[in-house]
Length: 119
Length: 236
Image (tube, rainbow over all chains, first blue to last red; front, side, top):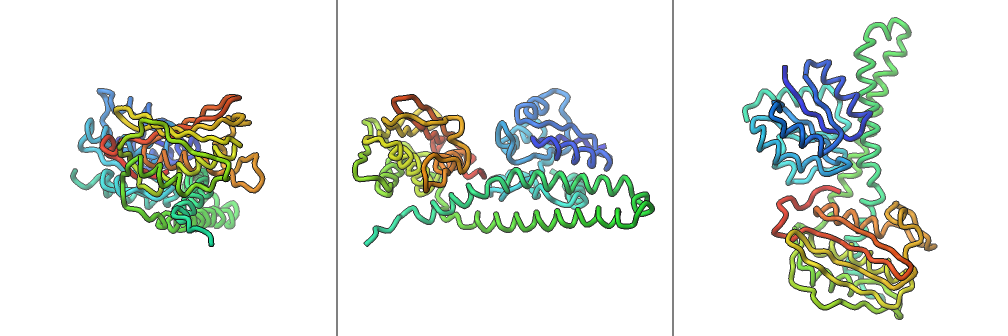
């Protein structure tokens, strides 16, 4: 079972998407904040296969977590979910980016493809 | 003949981005929630929805479709505005930004702008025109406080440079609301100046701080030093 860390500050969206992902068989840890996500990533037990990052969090840029992900989980994939245009810097650093309103089956398909690719 | 405004195009894009900002975050989140919840319900109910009333399944599908269409339209619109950003430069000299902002500021004849001693050659994250637009917003905002004298000063730390714009006016009437989009106490104004400055700061990894008292207001625009940030150009 693939483990995901889902960082999204909008509660409604976080709950809905986490439920859908769990139904797809993923083990999902979700958090609303940059700070909590940092703590989860730094925990000795962190073993995520992928991190889904909301680009804009209430306490920081979600994309600023990417260096930490690379540092502590070098094999984990990073997929950025954004309500706006993704900067070239983010596109370089992440493994993929999708608009927030992406159709869920398209999101899952992209996630599965990413997880199947070597890093 | 009117003098051409060297910052007009960049300012217009900044205002467009500010005015559409809620679409980027708030509306996108709402749409994503509705779309995902509709998908969840459709999948859970499955045939049961169709058996209850065939229109139930159809409508759930249509909700997803409408959400997709709306989101696509918003993304397309925002992308077009984003594409209007002109500069590829990622850093600029503070002195150049100040000079351009002052030259282009639309000030009453009674207002004077002074630069406090100590401005140095620090380079900050952000292109010249965009940073100058942010500073011009602050300078014009200070002038609108009916202050005859506006003072600009800079403070450089290990990580960044704070450019302070101070006026000797009566202070900000409602400090808690001054960063609220379209909030203004001045007839004929948009109420976006401070918001634009804050978004510019945020885009380049900086911040905006507002202080106000009965003897004047001071707004500090903090931007990371050009060499101190590896992540310029973040979206705002």
